[in-house]
Length: 394
Image 1: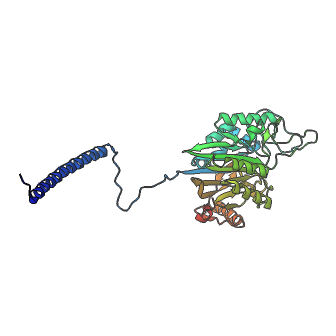
Image 2: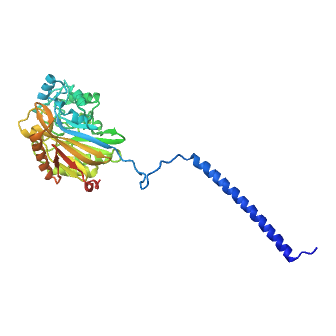
Image 3: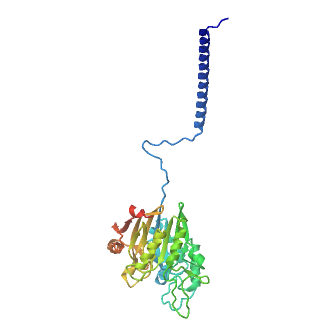
């Protein structure tokens, strides 16, 4: 049988058509299988919430705002102690406790030991001592951290000082800036709020003072002597640096300055700036027995002296005035701060109103302006809005 060329050509065409049909059928099977597997895979994926057109999902969780209120000197001895015995232990805080409790945390400087024992330090001349029940009053008022680093906490020597640490802790109040030994005294107090860690440090300029050559007992804590932390700039700067990365907010309490002076010294400002440069967010000062100006420095706030808070009658009118400072933090930055004017009457502080408030706030604004910090007086309080420019330093 002869094969003609066109016969081979027809056979080739037939084979090509068969191959094409086979490949098309195979491709259809593959596509069907891929579609089936994809559909099954999508069924396992969690349903994604629909986003409105033009909106983007946030990439970070915004930190919750945290508020701290800080007062000046709290002295529960002498005529304040008399008033507490007659009127009840909560009497000194009756008109201000709501302001302390309104914040997430309250801090103050305890200017007197709380004890029924101990003997006055020889030669000191002025001694304060309050009843141990005063710790209960502090808790009821809203305090959770109290500095003991000042020049009166050891007025009745070691036994009364150690009693004070015990009764504070029994009421859930953390003492800072003093202890039975250097390790305890210098240990920062760290509190936690909604996942944020707030660290407190405290020191005093008066730690190395003694009043009698016959009894050279200073207030400074030593390996063999309970006491308080001495304000040493380099050591305190190192302590602040050590807390960076361990705490979100660092607060330093300083008992310092010149009594009855309206102004911090240049040395104080240098120390305060060094602490901010090291990482401190807020510096709370006290001791002068009168208020001083506040300063915003690199996004941090320095209150050089909040003045007296709970105190008995003083001869100088300005020693009957003070400030209650409320600071609002957003993460590690200060959003704003409010200054409440305080007036002390009959051993009892109250938030000042009317002409008294205007006078105290005008004085605070004037002193703060000298520190290059504008304070806005509005509705009977002082307001500090920390600018984005200042916050950018942090």
